[in-house]
Length: 470
Image 1 (cartoon, rainbow, N blue to C red):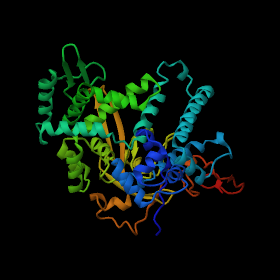
Image 2: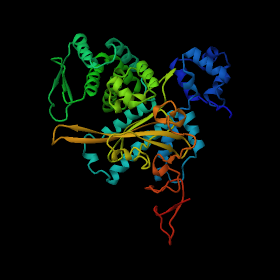
Image 3: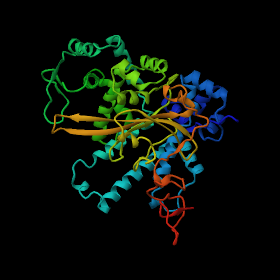
Image 4: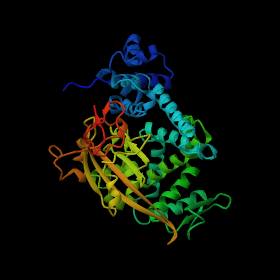
């Protein structure tokens, strides 16, 4: 099989801008001509092995990052947005989308932001949610989406924050039942913070920090893993305030709401990285073949925390198995999502009903497996389970979620979940991203026809789906 050509014009332009270099200066550092740099930045020529090595050596880059086609995620997002009927037949073909995502990724992201703004305006005008325009919090969803995309396009890995958490984890010492106690002691000795476990706080509050008196109150009904995580979130805001500010400034969020949400997201990231520091966690994951239950016991973490952390293991030169991770509520809405694989989640609708994450709600928390194939031919090992989160007593609320964690079958053999499965001859379940961009013609669970295909309605015959595609 011929090696795939690597076009990296946008990345080269960004690299040159980051280091404030002209094309001639970059050419000199790579020992090539300025005209060759111009052709590379214009994607007229692919990167050669010698140029990639020169870039890796001269700018401390990871070769795998240069060889990874980061435009795939943008193409998937563009295809989903362009499936909206508003675009009619004026939809670029796949090759045109790849060209835009490769040559002008910022333009592609701007188009996605414009579409999201259009979609929300259209919802208001159509009265889909009449209260939206009267709700002072109506801008919050847009802010959440902006932050979601920040992590999405950062590959859910924030290197300086991850390394800062790893350094503190080393200071806290080895893992064990008393690690929570050591974190509490650290807060007292280093920040003069008194951590107190208390009965349930007012309303749904699970943690409350009194800055004036340096008192941190933590709901005693939380399990130890959540107590550790929430204390670490507060610690991140105190100990990493400068770094958090730098990361937020670099992201250039459009609104104060988005910046505040991102600050909390980064603090959560720090907490997860402190609970499961990169090097130790990756080593344990490889040793235990990515058994999430074993990893949960080792690091005192919940399955959700372990799965989310696995999806962040994308440190250059120290990458783990690339996983996708998602959390789905009972209505089928994806409330958390990240993919280090080619699989991209629906941004503007519900998830495919054939995906095993929906069946997880029928179980009692046990992990179920699925071998699935998407319309592009990629095959995945998908794990799913559910959990309940209760607040208060009999009159308290119960939140139910289902979780999905998976990887491409090429990596499944590295996991305990793929050990007893014949991945070469097994039957793979056909799944998609969302109905309106799914190309499958015979899916019995289809809710709407795909935009890119014509449909016909037989007059004298009725099938499960009341129309035929193509």
